[in-house]
Image (tube, rainbow, N blue to C red; front, top):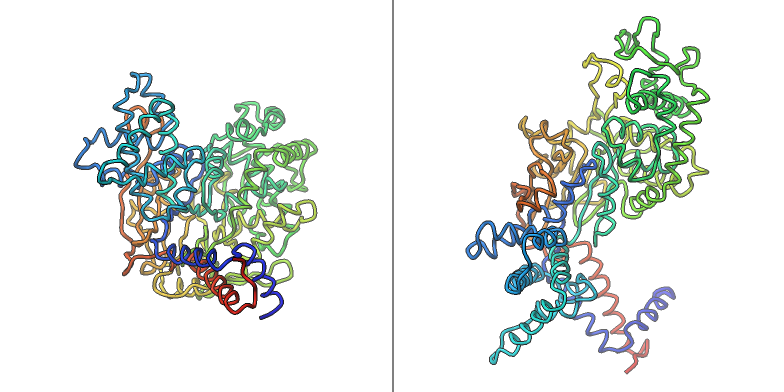
Length: 629
């Protein structure tokens, strides 16, 4: 045994000083290994749709309703089931609404508590008593634990004890207890949450979504291209700042920018209004910041030839006199006749006023306490990809060449492809945040990750200029990386999985980024079940194209199933009429035998821990380390 190993064993002996304490822990950990694995939920491309996401988070993607219907389907009416579900989803709000209608009587409260306890009891059955207790609110942990595990005995002593507790709760603080039980039910229904990219963009509630996620008990985030845009803006990238502001104006999400993050658009509007006097202040601001963005983008591309994005240099191809732009040898009419800050002699140069505007906006982004907190959370809980319980999670793509091999890119003096490209990208993204004043190349790379065809977060040639200034839609087509052709092939997906250390029949790629157009017959399950695309179009603007309003992939001890959600009306409607999101469920894969903790990543860690404890026990028995009696 090495000196380091002996040192570790002695430290472990301080935690477990006796054979009895060691034996107890080994028995406990072995028991945990034999429990069913916790339920994982995977969601992606939330795009700022706060109310829909909030509801799906509260109804646990329909799992809570399934449990309630299974328990009470033959005992309660349809309306009673809907009401108890809404109470679990929004306990504070629903109780407030019910009390406005009439006082909550004793029998209703008692019956509600009994039902919620029964639901919690069912959901807690797959966890250790210790884990369930840790999930409980601290103030009520002892009481809930007693109520969940009360057993009927010969003289009904436990029942009497149980009833006395309930009656005391009802007389003292029933509402707070109902709220606590609702929280416990939701926490037990989903053991771990994965967000596979794109919290930001389009909808105006990304800030509120992140606030919800910061309160979640267990989750990870795989960054999306729109997340990286906001991360770059928070790090101080001027082009990312301009693009984030432009997106907010384009999708009418100014409220999130100004009220959510305290970033004022006043200076931008004052600068823009004289340039576009016939437009509203926000329309003028959008026009001004759009041109500003393309100028900054051009500067970035010119100073980073490795990015190979010269085809995106289009401002210098504009013919102001004829109102056209030359792309690929052809001239296209522009739908915008005014470029008031564009200097034909130096089209990518900022005017003095433009520089003042972007400097102020950059300062607002880097100085927003709330934004910096949220972006810090994305760095703490997020990454470019994650390998978790046999699944590989990433937002965009693994760039491939025309033959289906890993595409290589020469960047920052090195050559990267496959997993190495992801690892390098994450290192650069972290450097941009944690060493922002000394990381100009990494700061520029945030824009590359957001917009480049070679980016693993994007994988397509983004045509923002054409979509903004040209009406001819033939110029709008965005060429995609060959990955989006090859990811239908099982062999390709197995090669990608192997590159990230995953092998076997039950491993998968969980992918976001590209909306599944079910109305056109597209399927989310690809490559013989090896890859699942879970972007179902949370964003309202995608509903017509996808035919649904988002997916949740659920992985529990029985296997994988995909839930397709219908559009959500509003939280207000849910409270008033107990309406819910209808979610259709499709079985993706059923395990031959139930998946236990033993088979998971945490199971591997527990087995290693058990191995260390067994070695220490052996050392105690051989006298190598002296146990305390």
